[in-house]
Image 1 (tube, helix red, strand yellow):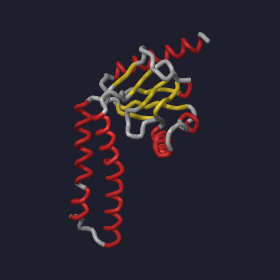
Image 2 (tube, rainbow, N blue to C red; image 1 turned 180 degrees about the horizontal axis):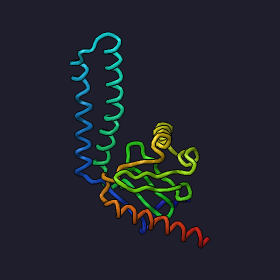
Image 3 (cartoon, rainbow, N blue to C red; image 1 turned 60 degrees about the vertical axis):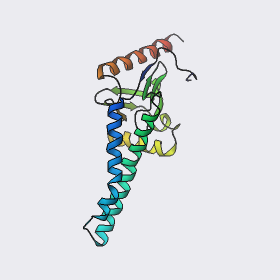
Image 4 (cartoon, rainbow, N blue to C red; image 1 turned 180 degrees about the vertical axis):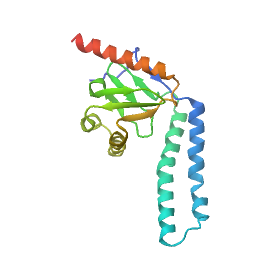
Length: 179
């Protein structure tokens, strides 16, 4: 069970504001270029309509979600993107984040520019998520092997993240063996 207040030994990683601002502007530009791209499209007939429908849907869903997520992260800078504790990992580092993942549900963690957390049982580990986030995370796990988020958006180096994951897991292991 996770306590309501995080312990002071938790590692909290916040977003890099400069990178988040660049990402936010980029997403905004892609969304704002949707209408001119549709109006200037030279394709006609069924192919043109299909192209425009796919373009608008993909653009608004992907970049629109990215814009809202990055804007929210910039507006609320006190909320960490990642929390690593003796209880598990709390992921807020992506638009469809996995939320809390207990250590007992984690099979492995690969830390690089993209952090990949392999989960033992996806259905039970992610059942706490709302349906849309659960679907995105389950799809991510099916195609890419785990819950993933960008380490480059966080205010930490790869070695600092590796150390924090190792420390959190060691505290979990020490607490589990002490019971």
